[in-house]
Picture (spheres, one colour):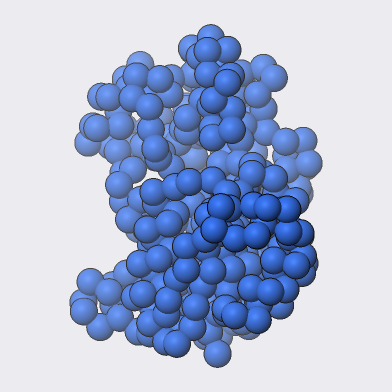
Length: 315
């Protein structure tokens, strides 16, 4: 495995910003190799006897199943902990929870709302902490996305990804990932729904180092022009359901549909982190069409996260 040549043991996986280009590519290559070995029936088990605590303040299909199955395939055990299952749901501090769990398990994954919760957990825990999702970042999904893109195109440097929709945690992680991996990214959002200003600044700084470009626009057609990949997400992420009607109006011209994808390259690939709302952010013809690789992305959550866990939790 590639990461055996890199010292990632004990590291947290909170954001792609914390990892170098070499480390991100190493994780992608590891994920592809772990996928190959799993399908060949010869999976390694570097985490035999180890355990992962999975804290869920936000529910999920892909995150829970992929982490739980991933730990099993790596030889370890995963423990599902909803906020109602542990004392954090009754007011115990993040610090106390982190220090306690660190005495029991070898790693902690959290899927939560505030990014500060992930930071506080990582600061207090003495075992690696993985960000399964926060309102600011979704690094595991982005790693799986770029793994999928690499599988499909055989490279990432110089390719263009267009993100159309809400400037949310998914946009943030894709921007940072593209910047570090030498890709060009164009992000099209309605006025008032753009990415976080600090994330924009950090991503542009990384883009200068790796020869990437970051384009921010309110024109979906401009973003989609000559794109190798077109990516979108739901218009109202979990926690913003009350804004659904308002967002439908603001995003009505940002649907990824047959008209918009004509601006991309003829062999473009469509990506979505799922779950998807067909008829809202994407048309049925696009997400269920021949250019869609959304279920390849979903599958690769398993392998990308196995690469992360094996790298930071191994002996």
